[in-house]
Each structure stands twice: as structure tokens, then as C-alpha cells.
Length: 395
Image (cartoon, rainbow, N blue to C red):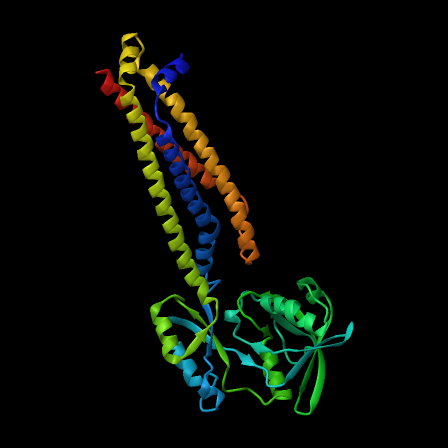
């Protein structure tokens, strides 16, 4: 019976408006759900890292090299007065210099006799380390030197240095398990000492050793403690603040690329906001077109509806006849939107993974909840409008 009623009401109606409304609804819902997915999988994690200080709140500063530094008319290093000036800035929470070796360091491995890699060594306050691993402390008299290596340093070695010098490539596990040695050379002396890679840093691009070891080695094999530093690390309140950027420009300082992560977070927030706005706009317009199309359909079928009412058909049966077409179409569009979203999330996850940004795979359960809520809202609103339109015709 419902099928016969639907046939009578929809006979001769133009379906083009419903097709365009369906496409707009599909596009709008997909945009909305994608913004929810990206907010949960990407932006929320990025903001959490920023708030916890794990990302760009730690910035590395160095002086921009210009003709004055090249000609020796200006120092490329920071002195103590400049460090004090940095520490006094309101946007700086804490600052510390990178103290470097003043002697020659070469890494060797007994399994590879021809291998000799020149290493820079630096020490920085433990407050700026990602984590302080076990075995990090060193005291005079200790034979083994604990070392923290930058994750990026390993990638650079494996991708560039090892192929060019015909050296073996290493994994993290290999470096931590196999015996490594460094040669300390300076002041007419030479000494081989074993090192132990106790951790890796994603924050600091360097080869880090404990400050106590660097102090001792600089006295024994170098020229002593340096009073100038090529770069410094600082914890800042807001890496994207205009005051910080203005200070760096005025002083001709450069900062690490980690600062771009804060900008990326802001750009991602703006992008998600734009996506959500466009999705909501398409969603609202498609809903309005749907409602107008159904109301127009009901208005065009006025004579048929009047005849059906005279024949004894009740208002609920007419509502079911109209809704019987509308609800399956809505559910089909929602399902198609989720399938499109699943494919899009998989594609974006693969592309982001190629760029080094690993995100949790799959569609977040909150997206399914959001899809159901949006669909239920539209269906309830549409059923209410359909009922009002039929009531106006039945009077």
C-alpha cells in the first residue's frame, strides 16, 4: 500500500533537484566528518604536544651569518651578555647555551677498522633534554661515556654519510648494543674511550654528552671552557608570539625549524575551521534544498493528495508514504559519505606517513557518532516539515 501511495505522489515529479541536493549533502557531510576526524587524529595531538612543551616550545637560536661574520668584524657566537639579555625577555622561560668540545673527536668501531667518523660533541642543561635516560651520569674515572644521539643525526648518517663513505648503515638497536669507541685528540695527547648510546633525542639535533665529561675532556684535550657559544636553546611561552619574532628579527637571530610546528598548528586549526565552515555551509544548503524540494513535490501533488484524503487515507499513512522514500535516500547518502571518508582517511594517512607524520589509522568512533547525529537531525527536521506541509493541504 505504501508503495502505491509513493507511486501516486511521486508520479511525474522532477528528480533533478533531489540529485543536486543529495550531492551537496554528501559533500557537506563528508567535509564536516573529515574535519572532526582530522581534529581528533592530528590537531588535538599536535596541540597536546605544544601544551606539554614537547614540541616547538623548545627553540634553538643561532646568529644569522652575514658578511660581517664572514669578514671577522662581528662574532657568530653568543657571549654571556647576550645570554643574559635573552634570559631577561618576558617570552623566555629558560635559556641555556650549547657547550661544545674544543678538541678533535672521531668515532671508531673495532668491527670496521677503516671507519672513522668525526663527531661534534655538545652538552646542555639536563632541563632541556627530552628524557634523562638511565646511565646518563658520568664522573671522572668512569671509562664508558654515555651519549644521547639525535634521531635526525642517525637518519642523516644512514642517508648521506654512510653511502658516500662506504660505511655500514646502523639501526638504533645496533648502535645501542654494539661496542663503539671515540678517539679524543688534542694537546698532543690521544686517548680511545668506549661510548654507550643511552638514548635518542627528537628535540635536539646533536651528539650530547654529560656536562661533567665535557668539562673534563676540554681541560685534558682542549683549550678549556669556552666563553662564547655558537647556539643556545630556550624554552619559550609561545613560539608563535609576535614579540618573539620581532626580537629575533631585530637581533638578527635565527631559530630552529621546530618553530614552524607552532605555525603549522595554527594553520591546521584555520584549515580545519575552514573545512568545518564549508561543510556546514554545504550541509545547511543541501538540507534547505531537500526540504524545499519535498515541499514543492507535495505542493505539486496537491490534487492527488486531496483525492487520497477523500478516499479515506489518513495523514500518518501519507507521511509514511513520503518519508518512505526520503529516509532510505538519507541513510544511503550517509553510508556513501562514510565510505568516502574511510577511503579519504586512508589516502591522507598514507601521504602523511610518507612525510614522517604518523597518525592512528581508521575512522575515529566519534565520527560515526557525529554522522548519526547529523543524519538524525536532518531526518527529524525534514519529517517535521513534511508533516506541516501535509497538514496544510489536509485543512
